[in-house]
Length: 295
Image 1 (spheres, rainbow, N blue to C red):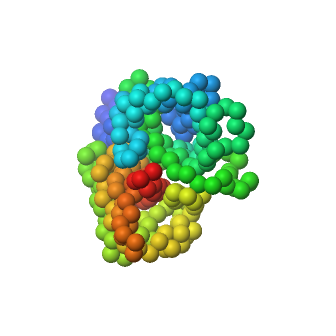
Image 2 (cartoon, rainbow, N blue to C red):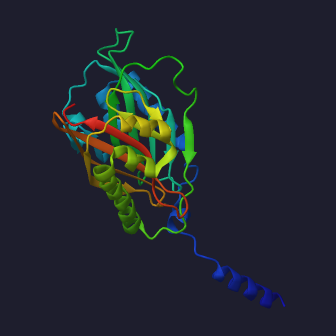
C-alpha cells in the first residue's frame, strides 16, 4: 500500500509543469533592497574618495556610459584624472527581475566643482542598470543621466519605491525573449515614426512609467508623460542598437539613436528604454530616457 502511494505521488509530481531554470537558479534574498544597498555603497565611495575611483570599483567589465555615444565605461574612467569634483546621488526607484540577476535604479544627482561648494553647480537625474556577477555581487552595466534645474522642495518621495518583478514561467529562452523585447521596441519606433512619439508611448507604457528628458524634471505616470511628449510634435525616428534581458524574461532594456526631424533640421539623441513584462503579457515600457547626442 505504501509503495502504491509513493508511486502515485511520483506520477503526480511528474505531471506538474517543470520549473523554469531561472527560478531554480534565482539568487536568494535578491530583492530590490539589494539594489538600494549597492547604490548607497556606490554613492558613499564617491563621497569618501573620488568619483573616478568609485566608478571603477562598481563598473562591470563591459559597462556602458554615453560620452558622445555609447562607450566602454571602464576605459573611459581609467583615462580620467581623479579630480576634485564631487558627485552625490540617491535612488528614488529600484526594480529587480524575478531571477534577481538584472535590476535598475533611478533618482536625483548633484554635482559640485569641488568640496568647498555648498550649493550644487549642476543637478539632474540618473538611471543605472545593475547585473549580478558570477561572484554574486551587483555591478553597474549601464549608467546614463541628464541635466535639469533643481526641483522644488518636496517633489521627491521620502523613501525609494521598490519593485520585484514576478518573472514568467512561459519564458522561451533568453534569445527568444530578447527577440520579443526587440520587436516591442521596433514596433514602438514604427508607431512613433507614423503616428507620433506620444501615441507610441501611450500604447505600451506602464501606469507609473518614468519619462526623463534633458532639461526637464522627471515626469511620472502614463498620462502626464504622454502629454509631455505630445508637445514635441516633430517626427522622430528611433533605432535600437543594443538589447539585454534578465534570465527570468521579465525585465530588459534597449538603447539606440533617436532623430527628431524638427523644422530647424535633424536633432540627434540617444534613448534608453527599460521594459517590464509580467506573466505572459506583452512587454511594457517602464522608463524612457532621452539625451542629446551632443552633450
